[in-house]
Length: 121
Image (cartoon, rainbow, N blue to C red; front, side):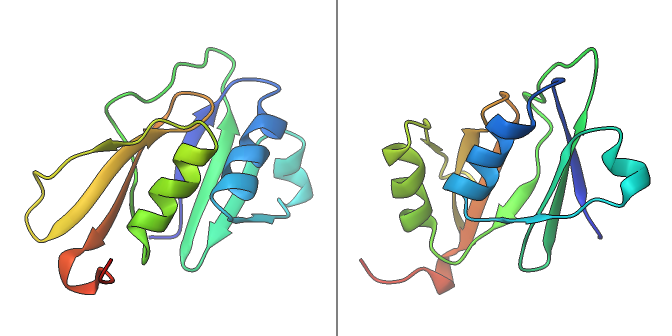
């Protein structure tokens, strides 16, 4: 998989930049000029790219979501909570610890970590 695309409302780039780059720690990518004219924002962390595309009739993805594997789930939950983002833990995925959160536009995101790789806390 090359990337996951999520929709954002017109003018939502700065708020998304604050969330994805500022809080999640992803890196912003330069969009090709022909695509940059459409607005939006591309971000990356390791092998994961998320393309945030402007949609005029924006509605957040409340059920559909990317499942993002992380190496420090507890640390991420703490960072999100400290930034005022609600974290909802869900223990119903065998072999993994996970939680859900919503980005600043209301899109659902799942963050998970295999139980065997969780650090002792």
